[in-house]
Image (cartoon, rainbow, N blue to C red):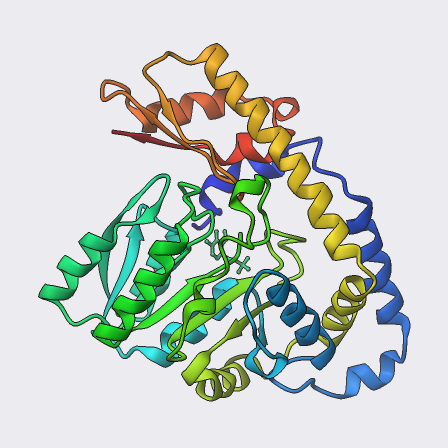
Length: 347
Ligand SMILES: Cc1ncc(COP(=O)(O)O)c(C=O)c1O
């Protein structure tokens, strides 16, 4: 993670995805920065963040089948910060936290930092968290929280079914633990069969306010904005307090510009064009796998997100393969998000 793991290839890519909507976002940012700069420089925003931005985020969730209000949301410095605020609030050192395995390395490091015990629950490359394995773990240990990415998890790109989403929330109700939902890829649906109408966030099935929803604009718009959010459910007040003590406030310029960008329909249009590019890239990558790699290679067909999962036969040392691939890679080959994010694993 010291140099951002799988992303070590990406910065050298010459041809990055160009979006006219992102250029518009830059214009919005500079226009908003020029308006009343001295007033902005003299005040902190409130810790929960700008109402106009929270309203736009709420509207996006409503279009994805989650009824939420702007007061349920608190703006954060990205999704990693939202995960930190949630874990720090819900757990105390020594608590057990279950995560998907394989899963997002950033969560593992966060858990270590917070001195929480990590319980790895196997996850299937296509359908995500193995709920049977989670129930077996619950028979043995008291678990305070489960961190899960139901839509297009890192690194497999798995999509959890609606039935499993409901079942996970029911298990959490029975065993009284918090579910920390990482929804960072939730907007990046490119296959209509995975339409978010059919796969609302886990929080849509939460009748006991125990699902904490975390996300950001890092994967949908820009990693450089450092703007995310958390809907903390029954822990929301404590999370806002921790946001105040850990960050005071978020930048008003950033928030105002993104809110305007969304209000004017640019976010929606950007997502439509970005996801169609991602679909093209997935198909190109699949075509390349079929053409150049042996038949024994197994691969998934992701319906959204940025990751495609590949499994090689056991005689292939994927650590060596990865190093070799890096050596042979020239920046001109790397104009594809998916190329940069293929995760290699030996079965
Ligand atoms: C699953 C997942 N969650 C969270 C993050 C961190 O997001 P942010 O850049 O918004 O802090 C990442 C970044 O790679 C991620 O893949």
